[in-house]
Length: 574
Image (cartoon, rainbow, N blue to C red; front, top):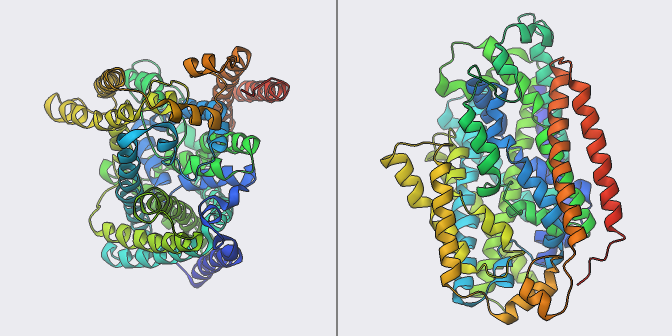
């Protein structure tokens, strides 16, 4: 890297801290301002912040690894999650905003009752806010360290300390500016990160060894360029593809793609101005996340197959970094480093704010000091943010690989998806249902992997049925939440269908017309997102059917807008 590269990076860091200082006064007001930006985010900021958070420093590397091993169809490991996100858009986005809670874990005691609910809330606050959160930030730190090590020619052990310094910087602006600063910087960081990745894809494909997209296409096997795997020449097995699209999307928990919404996605929905902004934010997130964002990464990943054919499989993800190092001139290299820093910082800042919201709202405020002032809780939130920085920074010396992390997390959350969705509509679900669905996958993963020798994604056929049987059995042998809790939840969240006993007792109608409209919107949303994803890819790769996909997207999206307009004239009150 040259001096101009370092100047570009320094300018970007100065911009980030300036945004935090601008919004610092708002963040100090109360915990709603610190964790939820006063519930006043417009949809385009909230949605873009979701996209930026899921674009971490490790994401282009992981996509490169998937493409080099399975071609474009390798991305079905995460493309299958479109359906889960679209279901969240039309069935749950309004409910999250309507619930009036600070975190998605607070939902537990809004919906469930008794000691089991209290235990589950406290456990998830520690498990997700501290342990899982720090592990995720730890492997994102490792990814950034690998990137900087390759680009700057510094040993990994020395780069670790640079990454820790950057994380302390991120922790400072997250602690000072709260969610307003995090969301606004996410918006700016997403623009920078995507601009850098687009530039890299143009530069790499313009290299004489590539001779443009057409030249790249001629040097790759046909199965690597297909969107859906077909036949014996498919780059991923048909059984794996069917498990991705038939089981994983509805059954498995994964950060940013939780069935029914959750985590930082729920946080952004609850931070939106109103229910309409919550829905629009989540719809924009889904379209941008799946259809707009991945193609610059995929094109570079395909190019690395040609440029670095001899790189061993365990180093395949690093070829994305090699492309930056070997093909970008001074200035543009600094832009890409700033882009990766933007991707890294948007993820880390969100995880710091989101994790501290669990530790403060669902642990400290709920169980330790329930009667303190709002200013006190904001100070504790800032302390928790710094504590998370310290813990996750220490993990950088322990975590030595990011390979397989996606698959492992999906396995450990296999089978909980139906509970997370049905708890909004089925009165019989209780805290023990959710606890069982969290615990049951663990022995199933151990047996399937180490006893039966079945690995991901094939072991989903074992884990999901086992988990489902366990939580259903527990649901029917334990009592539901008490009547007062169920009534309070029902009148607060106002689900338009489900909760049949309460609905009948209170003489509230079930809005079947609205139900079928939501089903239609969901199916159209899935069609629209995949059509735009494949349409953009087909345009880039010069496929004949590109405009067919684009036309299907336009028609599907237009019908969605029409149906949303019709909802305004439907009776949705209870």
